[in-house]
Length: 496
Image 1 (cartoon, rainbow, N blue to C red):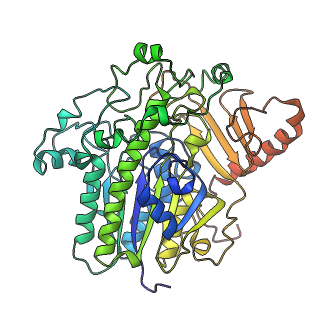
Image 2: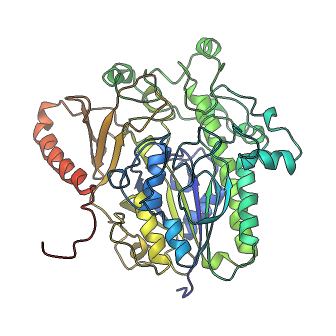
Image 3: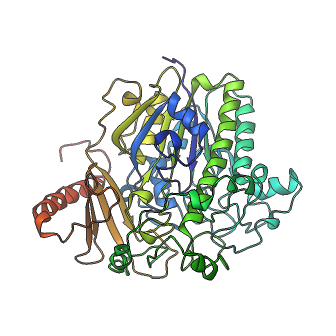
């Protein structure tokens, strides 16, 4: 076992589903570098996010706290609460040199840039969205394209674009920039250990893979999204629940429909979905984006290996949330709790210290990452961190088949980009079999799925008379679990 404090490489994709890695069961996608990470580390096959949106999810895994604790439920919020402490800041205070490449997004990035909290990052190479430059010099990816590559970013990012389009060549992609900036950070001279957050934008929409990767995936070869005709009527029940796509439709278009609904128009942020979409073409583009991401992630790993640092580097690959990707006739994200949106990849490797080639089916949450890093670095985990360290499970000291009895996802007016303005509040608990969703802001609305019998989440048992007692039991457990996400405040120091 390594005795030194490890370096930490935390690579976090944006909007990547759990079912998009070849070594974890996807027979269509090509992800050789992530497959190697699965072989060298521990893959958690049941990791769930605490919110379906970027900012609240990132606030959760960077603090190790539930949204009810850190009070950052919304995308586009004015500021990040100053009393909350990020794991990067804790590591910096313990002697780590911390750097960030790509996206932070703990507060609104709608202006020139986001307002940074006291985040602990000494190096801060910021690019929240590769497709826009609000003010000169802010999007450092654009500056790299201009100053280093000698190209005009507006060639590929002219403004609003269709949801499905062609991105820049792979060597000019934001993922390539992330890899180069990461390698530059790793090469810097320093005395102590380092921690690097690499946060690319892919595979977040727009669905715009590099052309050389796009041609590797043909829409006709894609398995269709999870969809039944009954999804269209079922989603009408949620017509006042805030999401980016409100109306479900058949994601497999006829040839005539492909012409009628060909990608046109578009938006700047990849947040406004089309009325109808080509689900097979979307999936092909999404997989191509992930393969490009896989390749660029591999470049960083290769550099760590060539410089002799890989053996003492703790590597994490994760995502902030998933993507509906046509399932149930829907795209993008919002207040939905389907597996494609709340279930994400999590792979952790530390050669010689953590188990290799283990696939754990334990239920884990994104908030468990922060205390795991502190544990690995020998830092005392503060009392207010709510996540539970995975360190002992990773070292083989603890049963890899169990970590938590259930996981929680909590949505509270989290989404700003929606056709409706209802202040939706909803929460989910999931125990590995039964998923219960309560729409607190919409009286009587809920979902109950038995994923053992119905892994596609097609049959909502919420109103089913034969499951009434089960629903009551799960509701009581749900209430107790949600109450536990609310912290009691400062430590008690007297029996007053």
